Image 1 (cartoon, helix red, strand yellow):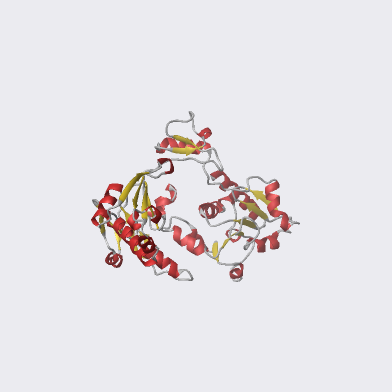
Image 2 (tube, one colour; image 1 turned 60 degrees about the horizontal axis):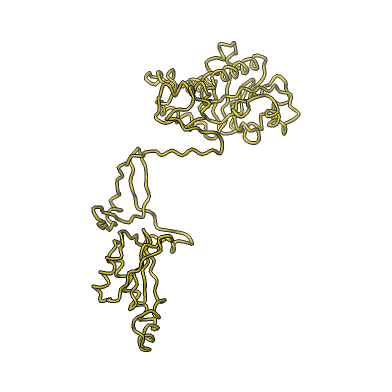
Length: 395
């Protein structure tokens, strides 16, 4: 990008020396701040007079961006980082503002009291479809002394792409230059970076890497390709808000304690904290509140433990049937007197009730009639439900 910035500075200087104006469609990013720095330092060296080197930066967030970059000094280039430890700003935009060479405004209308030509205007948007840049294109496009300098990385040549962007603004007489400021890494820069950092794992196109693929190289073929790589993420300590801690109902699960939470995770200055979630609102609030109140069940249910628990309840007619493992069923516990069966399927169980009264040992009409009683059927189903929950832990 250094070569591109020098091309921009040279184009701006030549245009201003001819008495023309320069329009730079930009977004507020690192390259724009670098460009302000280079224009402020190099234009006087090119012989541009002070009254010709005025820069107007137009954006509703420009002042915020300039102020924010002052507190992010650790990410600056070494040349600017050295200025941090001196009684001066790492950037020179404060000096330019104080001398009247840089004007930062929120919109075009704010230029009424300070605007003068020739000048350089930095405004959005690089697409030339919206933003303050449209005002200056209309104002300056008919004069060949003016210049439009495209710095967006997508404008990599002054061919069909640039003219496609300019098509809605024809006829245009101002000079058009293309000097993309691309901060992305090239293949040589990538190789140099890898040699200095020596990473454990590299995900990159194999063609970029010297010496071919190695054991720590995962080839990224390009757009729409997929690379699978397992990353070891360490456990991080998390604090629990006092109000949330008071709401917890902790249960023991083997050698572990667990509790059901409904909360938000906040991260402030590297300190993570669990805080209570706000109550549900809106048309689905009742359904969300019901979902938050549901319990989560932990534990392992085995056929032998289930039969033993049913025997303690007086259910003596339990049968354990082998399951169809091809369908994921390990075993089935059937209790005819409860008119129910439990299918154990690995990490889950399926309880079925009300379908096995014909297979019960009792064949009298009175027992069949009793099984048809909905209240008694509900009571029997409740017994099976309670026995299962005795063997598990609810949180």
